[in-house]
Image (cartoon, rainbow over all chains, first blue to last red; front, side):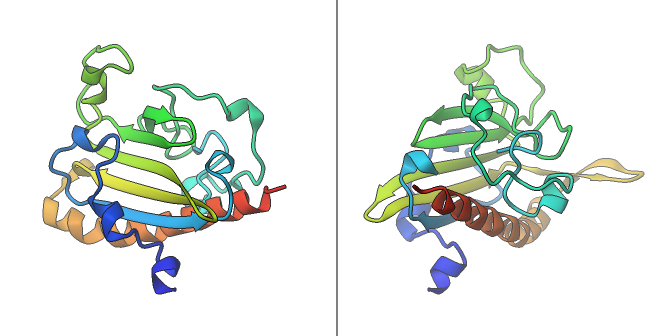
Length: 44
Length: 154
C-alpha cells in the first residue's frame, strides 16, 4: 500500500537497464518511480 | 506531454504556465518523431527532446548538455549530446493493465539564479535536493496519467 502511494519502483525495475541509460554513464543519481494503471499499454 | 502540448499532468501552476493539462487525448499530438520538443515550461526550447521511442513500449526524453555537434538527429552521436539529463518512460503489460515505470538520470544540475545566471550545482547538493523535488512532481504526474488513462477506458 505504501509502495503504491509513494509510486515506488521494484528492485527489479531499479536494476534493469532502460533505453537512454547509456548516454549518462555516471549520473548524479537515478530516480525510479512506477505505478499500476488499469488500462492497456496502448491506452496509457 | 509537454508544456506547449497537452501539459505535464503534474502541478500545472509550476510546470504548465497555469494552463490545465488536457483531460482528453489530442489526436493531432499522437504522431511523434525523434527530435520533437516536449517543452519543460511554456516557451522552453532546450528541454525536453525526444531521443528515442517505441509506441506502446517506451519513450526517452533528454536534455542536451554539450553544445550541438551538428550530428544528424537520431544518430548515436546526436543522442550522446543529451548528457545533462535523461527521463525515460516505459510501459509493461501486467495482469490487470499496465505498469508505467519512469526513470530520471541527471548528469549534472544547473540552476538559473538571478544576477548570477547559470550556476552549476555540485554533486552532493544535487543528490540532496533532486530526489525530494523530483518525487513530488513525478508522483503527481504518474497519478495524473493514471487518472486520465483509467477514465478514458470504454
